[in-house]
Length: 279
Image 1: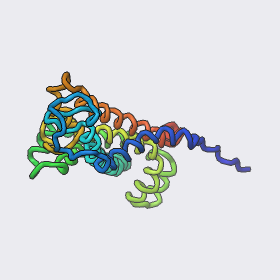
Image 2 (image 1 turned 90 degrees about the vertical axis):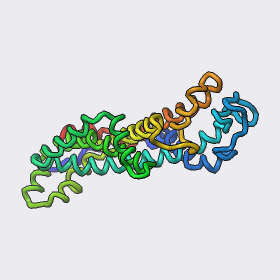
Image 3 (image 1 turned 90 degrees about the horizontal axis):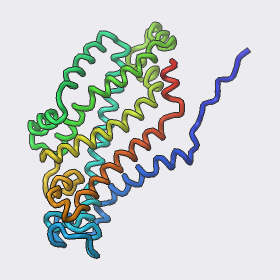
Image 4 (image 1 turned 45 degrees about the vertical axis):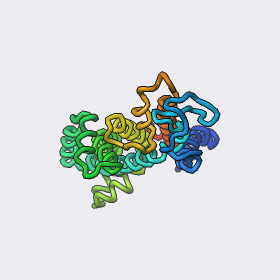
């Protein structure tokens, strides 16, 4: 006599949409922001650090440029850069972490390499990569965030993959002669969906942090480019004259980080972490 498998718990669709909606709206606003901006990003329209007025609801920055315009135009590149970094780090960590769990000798080599990279202070790593990269720019930021993010991500995936690798069906597939690629893609990774979704959200937020830190260190986006991190650095000296020049981009970065984390947690299958742990 056979018994039916237990029904999988599902999260109400309305709850998932509600938790992902803030991130979707913010992403759409950031993408469309440059087209919605009422002025050119480098056009002075007010006095330096002018208070909020009719023509500039958020006032002016240190050069009299419209803070609202630069806020609308400053999120697209930051979000695009962070998405690329999060995707690259998650894919790399998924492959290396799973291989490390399946092949202990290779895993020890990966662990030692990760240990070396984790010893590198983040600020020093950002400076080393961005200053040595030819011409710098966004590619340098992506490279810096990638190098800093992979070691931690690999450790997380390897720890999550270890109990999956120890299950009978993976061992049976390995004993049956299945290749490493098959074991990684078909046997292990499908059981790590919740871990990888959570990891993607975490690496996105970490990438935002790296890009923002690069802006503060003056090795990221350069004037007159509109960028939220750059806006904070440029206008820090006039925060008492027009606080919105600093608060508005700071709030935008904070909302971006929180909304993406909320969306990532909403997309994790209910009971996913428990299922992986129990294997």
